[in-house]
Length: 474
Image (tube, rainbow, N blue to C red; front, side, top):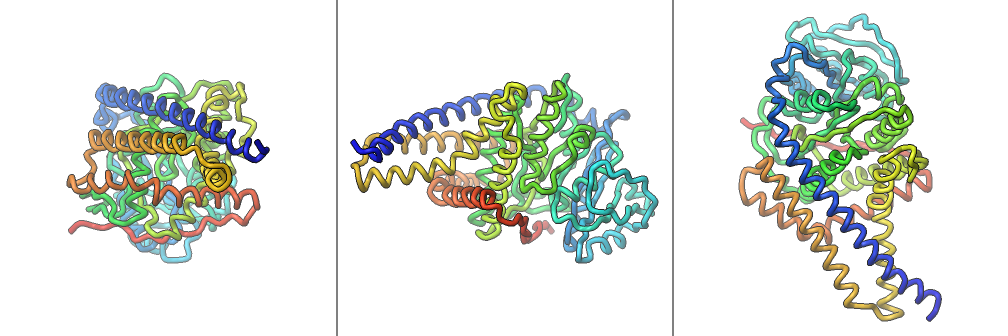
C-alpha cells in the first residue's frame, strides 16, 4: 500500500470518528437546549414582566444605537426605540459622521438643541462633536451623540457607551425593530440570578416580508426571497438549539450585535468594543469572559428564547457573501487573538469547553468538509471507494441534520407561533431538505474565503448592506 493510499484510507477512519463526535456534541446541545427552554418557561411566571414594568425601583437601562446614513428611516426607527414599555430608560443615538441628512432630520423632528454635556471618554473613540437633547419634554429620554466617522459600528457603540448614564446598556442597530417589552425582558436575568450577570441576549427574527405598524410588528411572514428564506431557517436552528444550550452551560461566547444587554462597568473594564474587529460581538464577549476568569469572579451570560427583535438580512448573493466572509474572518480573528484560552484550565469552562468547541465544531468544519471531499475524489479515481461506508456516513449526517432542524422548527412554532399560515410553515420545512445542497455550500465558500483573507492579511472592509426598509401596514 502506497503512502498516499494509506493517507486516504486513514482519512476514512478519521472522518468517521469525527462525524460521530460531531453528532454526539449536537445531541448534548439539543438535550441541554430543550431542558433550558423548559426551565425558562416554567420560571417565566415567578417574576412577571408586568412587575418590572410597574416597579418604582427599576434598574436604569440605556439603549445605544449607532446610525450612519440612515436618513430615509431614522425618524420612524427612533420613535420605535422610544416606545419601550419600561419605567427607567434612555435612547442614545450615535450619528457616526453621516454624510446624508440623518442629523438634520433628527434635529428637525425631535426639536433638538446642542447642549453642554459632561462627556468622559472612558473608551477611546473618534472625536465626539457634540450632544443634542430635545426641547420637547415628550422626548426627554432621547440623547443624540454626533461624532466623526470611525469606520466601524464598534467605534460608534463605544461613543454611545461613554455617553450613557445607566449601569446597563442595550446595544442594537438603529434599523432594528424591538418588541415593546424588550427592555423589561432583557433586564430579568440581572434580577433573577444569584451570580453577576455580565450580558444577556435574545432571539432575533428576520423582518424581510414582515409588515410593521407604528414601529411594531403587525404581521409575521416567512421571507419570500431565496437567501432570506434560508437565513430564517438558519436563525431558528441557531437560536433554539445553539444559544439556549450554551446558556444552560454558561458557555455563551456570542451575544448578537443586533440585540444584547451588557453590564457597563465590565464592558468599560475590558476596553469596550474593539474597532479593528470584524466580529466585534463575539470578540467582546470572549474578552469579557477572559477578564472575569482572571479576576476570579463568578459570572453568567444568559439567553432568552423569545423573539424580541426583528432585523433585515441580505437578500442578494453579493451582499450575503460579503457579510458571511466578514463573519468568518471575525471568527478566525477572535480565535487567533485569544488563542491562549485554548484548553487553558485557568479559564475554566471558557478555556476547556467553549473555546475548543468553537475551534473544532465551528472554525474547522468548513476546512474539513473540503478536505473530506478531496479524499472522496481521490478514492473514486485512484483506489476504489468504500461505497457502503460513504453512503452510511452521508445518510447518517444528513438525517441527523434533518432531525435537529425539524425539531428546532417544531419548538419554534410551539413557543412563538410565528407565521400567519400553515403554508408558510410548509415552505420552511421544504427548505430544510434542500439547504445542505444549495445554501450550505455557499456558507462553506464564504467561510474559506474569510479565512483566506485573514491569513493573507487582506485589507479589512465592512462594506455596506443595501436595505429595502420595513413594509408598513395600512
